Length: 149
Image 1 (spheres, one colour):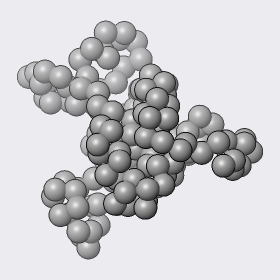
Image 2: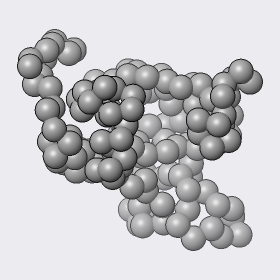
Image 3: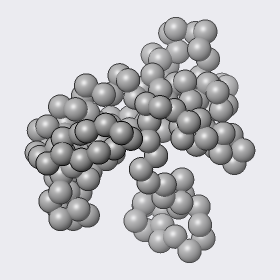
Image 4: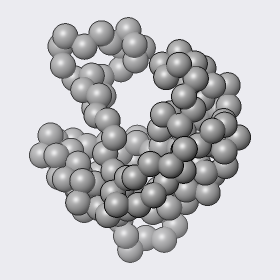
């Protein structure tokens, strides 16, 4: 099935295999974009090996080896993708949109806001959904007690 998005014709993914193949191909591009957004909004990444400086690493475009110091997010497993497609989207595989993902940490709401603005202005990205688990009325049981945006 074809649909238009941002002026482009796209073909919807029909299977978990297609979804994961696209995720594997897009992961390096996502990582590049995430690094760029973090560097322009004072974002941090979780360190592979926490040091005396703390458990996070600030992204610096100048340091090529920095990527080896960061704990990058894993791609969602086939089992989790299928479970989400079934439970949340009534088997519409194309609606599962967080198969490949990354996490940027911020120490202020202004830095978070700056990053969201950078993403919204990025022609290579689209904000599909924002979940605000910082809201006191949010049922934190859905995220295991973790409060995130």
